[in-house]
Image (tube, rainbow, N blue to C red; front, side):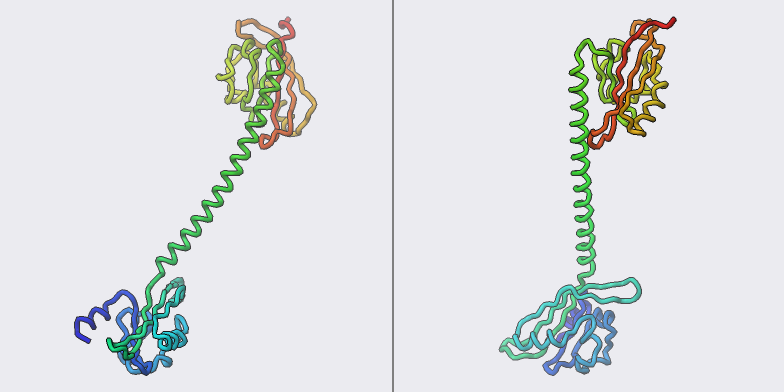
Length: 273
């Protein structure tokens, strides 16, 4: 072996050992000596006397197979624990060596460091599992959104069925966000449906004292009480007139993920004395 070949072998990033035809260690490069505790004094020793013959993997069987079949043998996913918290992975190649005439001259074992590849594979598996979990959650969210949309549509049809001469009707969800606002509610308070829907009932700037509705509505929602509640309130309509308004509020259940909502029916019943 020329000095150049020897230097190249010794400096290779892959750990490599070379055995002669008698199975004795001829050479171990720098990486192999570092990983497997070999020294120059181990040259000439039978492979079975060296720790590398059985750690990180039982090599002798694979060496016999490579020699008998005169072909390279690959051993994958070999793990070696080195110190506290350090684990290395190898793909090992056992290669018979022969002259051009075919005469066997020995055998080499190459330890390809696959640690980073294995770590990336584990990270990708974790990422894939997270993505599957996120996809499942997204599907559940989509189902919940469809349920909510269906519930709102049922409420919309209910309010529409009350007709144009109906009382003012507002529908709020469990958080008192306005889901529905009919035409009569617009006539009473001067707020169009597109201006009301999505707002919090208590933040609504109208002449109806909505803050007085908050506590009884929340109590009814919390109890799931289907019996209507009722309040008569002094209010100011869209024209600035003082009126008395009877507000009937009814809890509705069986609304999918919305769980509960409240329908508020508002009727002008007179003027304050």
